[in-house]
Amino acid sequence: MATETTPASSDSELAAKLLRAAGALALSIRAEGLEVLQAGRQIKANAADFATDADLAAEKFIYEQLRLARPEDSILGEEGAGFEGSSGRVWVVDPVDGTFNFTSGSTYWCSALALVTGASSAALRSTADAFAHAEVLLGAIYQPEEDKLWLGGSEHPATRNGHPIRVDPRQQLGELAAGSYIHPGWLADPRAAVPWQQAAVLPATLRMLGSGSCDLARVGQGELGLWFQHSCPSWDWLPGKGVVEAAGGETAVVPVNGLDWFVAGPAGAVAQLKAALEQGVLPE
Image (cartoon, rainbow, N blue to C red; front, side):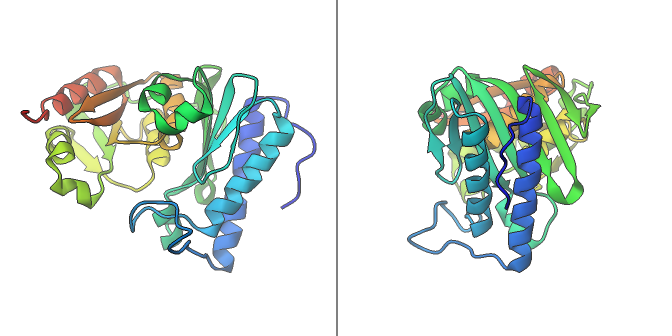
């Protein structure tokens, strides 16, 4: 992969250029044959959540280009890349979101970035409250195999491939399709299973597609009505949060039974889903 030497003129142009290149890099590595990281090198926690050499190569590329183009900004990468800068801005990097889909040959995966302020990179790695309330200056999500690029944040309008997008204007939860994800293991744990079921029975239909950022991008354009999931790391939440909010949607973090639930969509539906999750509080 050639080294970028001329910084893009804006953050959105830089993000778009980096995500397109990182997505192409990941695809080229997949075409040559992927290496899934084995025990002792594996970063993730379960059989459906793992890293490949494509994840690491794409993150390394983005990290190196950000250090060249924005040397004073901090960087936080899902796979461990990090830098603490002096600007007060943090780039949050998800090189391949939907890795299980990616390794399975599905097109439903993406590379994603968020540029945020109001929280340090250390806080964004470990503190849900920090990244729940950080200001997303720019969220960027690129789905390489469909050539779809979503942008949006407090400093950028919500767009897909340059065209304006808006969340679904309907406010009633029962009229909307909801995207979600819950690992099968959590279905045996009432802390998550009870509030999830309280919420999951209310939308018109439910989708589990395997990439939170792809889902949130589609909430931003109204293809999905809303989205909810618990225990999201910052790189799975912040890019889509920026797009959804710029598209006129609402986001919320709902603590229930010691878990944080992340919700995005039209304001009325988000309020209804939040109330449903809170009905799943277990008795002490």
